[in-house]
Image 1 (cartoon, rainbow, N blue to C red):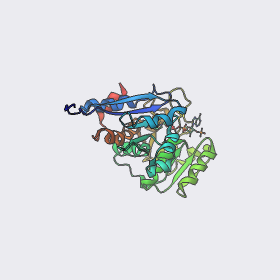
Image 2: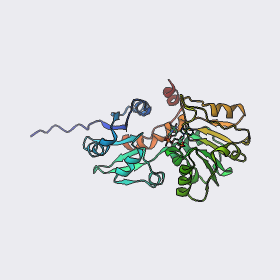
Image 3: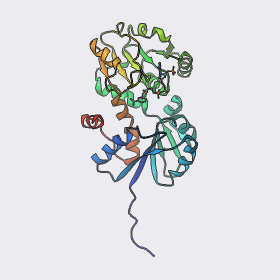
Image 4: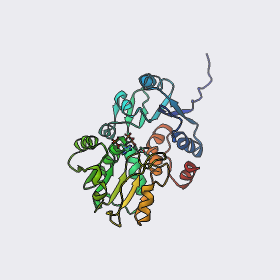
Length: 281
Ligand code: NAP
């Protein structure tokens, strides 16, 4: 008989995608693990779509407490989970997985939470109820943004997307406060807007710029971009040049990681200037 007390194994979490090399999440969670001196590991894992179900069965047995999920697994992860949060179900995709002690898997989506926290932290006077929001884009990230803005009491969302059908589906899913506008009318829709969001991939390094002028935007409008490579997109630079308040997309990435880290490692992490500087190194 061995009387040696069992030493607790390190806590494990990670990120699953395909490919995974580009993910900034290991840098983010690695910083927090070091900063809080936690005996844990956050591991990037490249998993092919055909292997996702097997990974979801195996990782709980290996002691993982949870995962982030990135492209192309966000929708499949929600479908494979045993349970999900209301917000993940509403968005239709998961970015965070909690593995319960019994091995069951709960899917969450923290992108909308990260989006809102970023705006409150970096634009403290921002009042989402002050006026309509213009959201450009209707992909997975736009769904999270729309859900979050509605949750904050935005009176109306004017939604445009290159592929109109996708914005119409989104509007149907989210109800009467979301109004679809034509892609070519996006610039006009900014008149009277309190919040203007680029939730497309346009403006990202290697992509064309968002083709809309901000001339109609009110002086007190807040402009934000989900794209954070470059950190100041041409859209944000144009907004800044007009004297509008701007918030870049990096803070959303940092804040969306908070609920997962807290659940897996038992410490609510801070999003502060030192973390931001570390991510920009
Ligand atoms: P997605 O589901 O693939 O959707 C892409 C969106 O971009 C769609 O609205 C798409 O329009 C639009 N788009 C792409 N290329 C376009 C083009 N050439 N012209 C016009 N529209 C174009 O991607 P997603 O997950 O929603 O992500 C969207 C962006 O948000 C990405 O840049 C992503 O990196 C960023 N993001 C940032 C964070 C953060 O933490 N800051 C989190 C999530 C996502 P169609 O429907 O017409 O194709």
